[in-house]
Picture 1 (cartoon, each protein chain N blue to C red):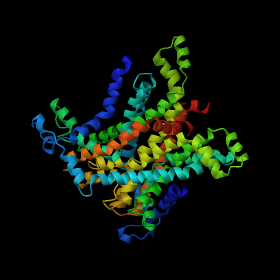
Picture 2: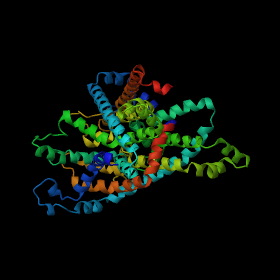
Picture 3: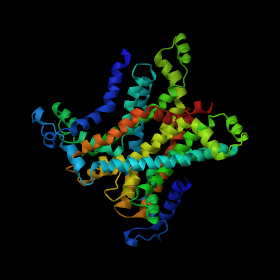
Picture 4: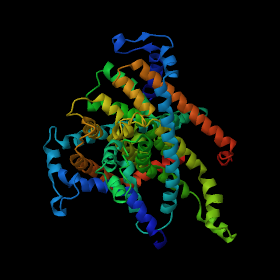
Length: 276
Length: 271
């Protein structure tokens, strides 16, 4: 484990201080901090970082809300619940690359069902996969579709640890179900919400499969993520030194983002239930 | 029940509609896909499936590759993780918290970022283009999750049990095999199925380690169809591939949904 997780980070740190590309005959040559200086002034890196953050925050936000609704639904007792739970798991279990191309067909202009529907409603071609302002939303949708079941399951596990008596007592006191949600469910669920938030944000930050297959980073780089940029640097531009720098830079940004998130949570007092 | 049924139907449509659309597409002729005016009865075909199974290499090859790789990764991970998890429950108390923290951090780490260094390792040790070798990084990447699930299970067992078995004169290996293993079987099953799904779906590392077309795993083979041309993806054949590739997973999820759910939720609660 130390080898698989620790070694790459050390190796990147070392590589990021070297020029290692076709120009040097793929032999690492120390170039001081040139890679890092380049990173700081590399507009594409910062644009990708913002796009990755946008993708992560928006999709994880939507996923949390949807997953909460699904978890509440699956927490009720009704017949066939097990089967429905299994079926909702399917999107999560399928390979990302597989459905990514499926989405490309569904959002295809002009033959996909979405465009056909829009066309029959009189809304002209939407060009969902070639309009930079829309395409990133398609990637968000595909991600939400795939990973919501995962969060829903974690939240469901949390819901099932809350004793029913608590709700019964609350209702006897005259509380409504909306109040119960806010005063009992959400506070007790906070650890689960934070856990899935952390896990999903880290995953979304490394988004690669989905983007590479669904859009290839396009149109005009509008959906390119940091992981894809690092991949392109290594595999297409054959610039391994800079690719390592991009990955380390991205990792540092992720840490900063998580730190910032934790700080905001602490300041807003949301994290307090965890400590008691 | 009635109060929820509308929501349940909505949930099912949301989860299944994209897949059902692929199913429909896979039986539609290529001409009908781009021409809505073709009469209903002339729109259907099995050609996409025929093409897929007679192409070179045939599609079942990728299924076989993925199955083999996933099975090997699963076996390797569980074989290594069970003794390691047992050891983790025996380390001194003051070390337990830091070690757990490291394991959780590793489990959360977006592993995509590791692909470049792993690729270098593969080149260094000539591990590229080998399914057997690919099982090594897969096991390592899934080790944190496996350890979390299995240590949680072992810690849930009464401590006296292990001590009693030791007093009976059982060796470490015997205790693991005859006392621990049967008791943590459910957790092991959960771990195994999660590792299997990971290995089946993994993309970036397989993409960079494998280049021979008869060795590709399912996700890489699928993505290759997409990458071949941006403008003329053979959507019909592709949809058929999706359907064939999804069937094993469908069976797996329906058979093992209890283990999957338990694995995911135990990881959440005790991790």
